[in-house]
Amino acid sequence: MSMLSPNRLGFAIAFALLCSCSSTPPATSNSTSQAQAPSPVAAAATKSAATSPADTPARHESFSAWQSDFRRLALSQGISVATLDQALAGLEPDPAVIAADSSQPEFTRPVWEYLDGAVSASRVKRGQQLQVEYAATLSAIEQRYAVDAQVLLAVWGMESAFGHNIGNKNVIRSLASLAYAGRRASFWQEQLLAALRILDAGDISARGMIGSWAGAMGQTQFMPTTYASHAVDFDGDGRRDIWNSASDALGSAAHYLHASGWQAGKPWGFQVALPDNFDYALADTGIRKTYAQWNALGIKGTPQGLAAGDRGYLLLPAGHRGPAFLVFGNFNSILKYNNSTSYALAIGLLSDAIRGQQLALQWPRGDKPLSRHERIELQEQLSRLGFDPGIADGIIGANTRRAVRGSQQQLGWPADGYPTPQLLTELRKR
Image (cartoon, rainbow, N blue to C red; front, side, top):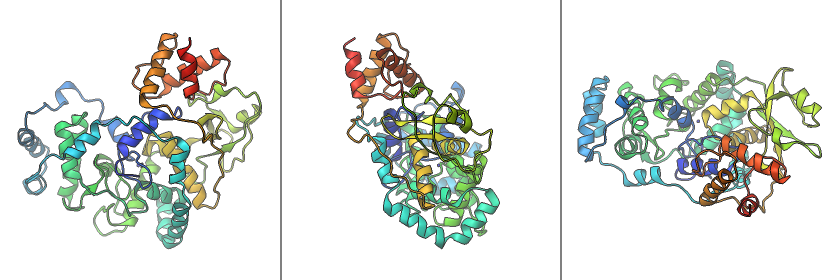
C-alpha cells in the first residue's frame, strides 16, 4: 500500500520520526508530491522480519559471488533457468539504490505540509474525474470486494498519481542490489525471489517490471510478496498487470484492503472538537472507546455509519494545537496498507474530498519540527530524567510518546505526547 517524490522509504522513515502519532514507518514507494513509503512494504517487511540465523544470507566479497550463490538458491526454489538467464544477465548493483537504503534524512516536513500535497486541489479534481471515467470498473470492484470507490481512488492517487508515476527503477536490479548490500538482506532476498516468480508466471517482463528504488511496483506500489498474495487479474486478460491495467491495479488494492478488514459504508474516522480542559493523555492508540463514550467526555463530531459497538481512538497528528480526529477500524485497515499514521490520514482525507467532503483544517503552521539529532537528544534527555523512551534512535514511537506525556504531565503542560522544540529546551534546563 503508499507514500511521492523519488523515493518513499527515506521520507516514510523521516516522517515517522517526526510525527508522534506515527508508529513504525514503512519503507518505499513512489507516490507523487511527497516521498513516502511503499505501501504494502511495511506489511511485507513485518512478515519477513522473523528469520532465523540460518536463513540470513551470508555477506559476499563481490557481487558476482553473491549472484552465483543466489542463482543456486533460486534454482532450488523452483525459479526457471530461462527466467534467471533473462533477469540476471549483465546485472550490476545500483549504487543509488544502496545509498538510498542507508540514508537517514536529518530534516522532515511537518504533517500539514505532507497533507497539503496529498490532498491538493489538483489531486482531488483528478480523482473526481476518474471516479466518473472508471465508474463501471469501480462499481464492479465494490461489488466484489466491498471497498469504497473513493478510498481506492485515494490509494491510486497517493501511490502513483493515478498511474502516472510508478517509478523508473528496474525492480530486479534494485532488489538484487539490496539483497547483496542492503541492511535487511533476508527481506530483500525474499522480495527478489518473489519478483522472479512473477516473471516466471508471465505477468510482466523483466524490462516491464519497474518501480521504486526499494522494489515497490506498479500503480499500487506493491512489494513482490504483497503482489503474490493480493494482486488480481480484474480485467480478465490472464495477467495480473498492476503496471499497465488500471482495473488490475484498483482491483488488487481493493483485494488487499478487503483482506485487511475494510468494512464498506463505515467511516475511517472524522474530525472532532474537544472540550476545554480536556485530558490530552487520552489521545493514545491504546485507549479505544465507542463514540458514545467519547461523546460523554465532551467530544463532539458527526459520526456516520458507525455501529453502537464500534471503538475508535483519538488522534492528534500535530498535538493539542492542531486538529483532532476519532479513527476507527477502517483507519487500521489503511495502516496495514502502509504503516504510517500520516499516510492513513491522507488516504482518509483524500477519499472524503473526492466524495465532496473536503475539510479546512487549522494547523499550527508556525511550529518547527525537530531534526533527527534533536529527536535523539530529546530521547536522551527523557531517559536522563527518569522517563523511558526506549532506544535513543530518533524514532518517535509509542515508548517515546509515553515518555513525552510523562514529562509534559510533570511540567503541567497538555500531555498530548507530541515532541516540540519547546519541550526539548525545557528538559535541557532540568
